[in-house]
Length: 200
Ligand code: ITT
Image 1 (cartoon, rainbow, N blue to C red):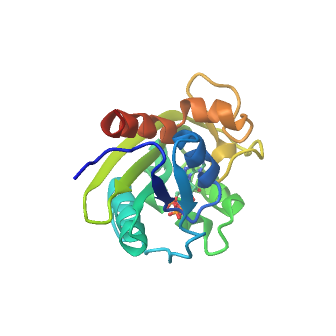
Image 2 (cartoon, protein in one colour):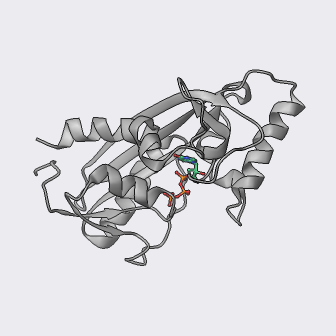
Image 3 (cartoon, rainbow, N blue to C red):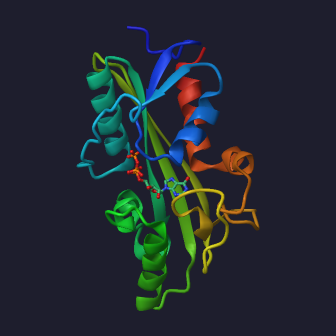
């Protein structure tokens, strides 16, 4: 079994989050034939694991088994130090069934106010899993640390981007150009590890 990413190979991008697709496509460059889980009409699995890595593996394996192709999944989220790592793996769920991140961001601010926390330290995590249809799976994780800011600023990213200022930056991820976010993001850092493991 050759656990390598080979130029030109077809990869299913196992996400139903439209915000992640351009970021994952940029990371993979023009080197692969990408097809999304949405384009293949693959159902979204329930995320029943308790870690980013576990959920990334679950999503990648689900897509690989259903499509018969190599599949790449991302499980990611925002962790707030003063909230003991919440929302963490529940980041998407805090936005509710309408996937409204204005609601999720307001909830973060409200939780911090409720406990009178002044510490604004936070980090994004991305676990990337690449699964082969016959079972093997490689999982890596990347993190970017920073600070939260309220009110949210910028409309360029997705999810919690307007709240987050990465270490050494002044703009939020929501205000940064996509390429500038991609240069330092949790997803990029995870992808660098994946490349080191799977590309000759
Ligand atoms: P898939 O499982 O289909 O990929 P999802 O949105 O449910 O889509 P997750 O379970 O990984 O994905 O949820 C992660 C949430 O964390 C996501 O909905 C975003 O709101 C947030 N998040 C992750 N990466 C982010 C980033 O780079 N910028 C802003 N928010 C991010």
